[in-house]
Length: 112
Image 1 (cartoon, rainbow, N blue to C red):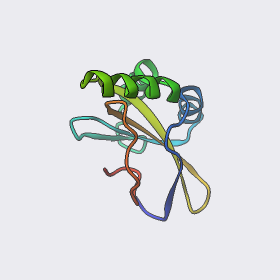
Image 2: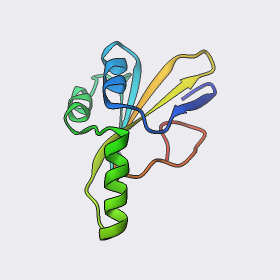
Image 3: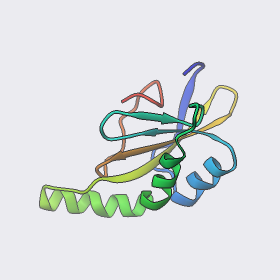
Image 4: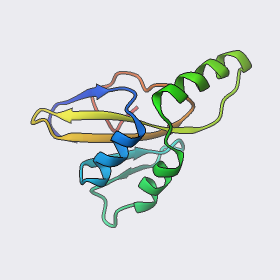
């Protein structure tokens, strides 16, 4: 990805993320096995957004699952979202599949 990126929300709400992606904002999906799907792929991986639509959780649910994982020592895989902007203010929605953990700070939105 080119340009300078800034994460504007580490735990982006479900409706806001899906609405922005549905309205044409760029998106990227980081699958837990390492595959990356992008809105710019040809052909576009429409299954990625469909999967996000059915598995994306709210930030409050993430916190609840995180606390439960700490108590029980195990967790389930969920989908969460972040919001990034480039230096021109254009948004990028990052969906990612993982346990209920926020992704670390990083310079590029599509890399762990």
